[in-house]
Image (cartoon, rainbow, N blue to C red; front, side):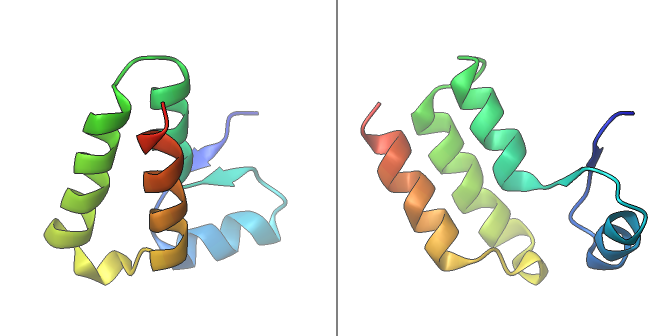
Length: 74
């Protein structure tokens, strides 16, 4: 079975209740950087854009900062 990628909390909750593998923005960006599909600098910019373009996502600041610190070291 394939993982579900979503930022919708209702869909995420439903999928988890059905024991499905669910991922979001952080997971996607992590993998794009790990596979050298995008540079860490681009990932940082895209993370910032997500926060600006869709503030309703309410991305956890701590998780954003953690990734920015990690990607900045690469």
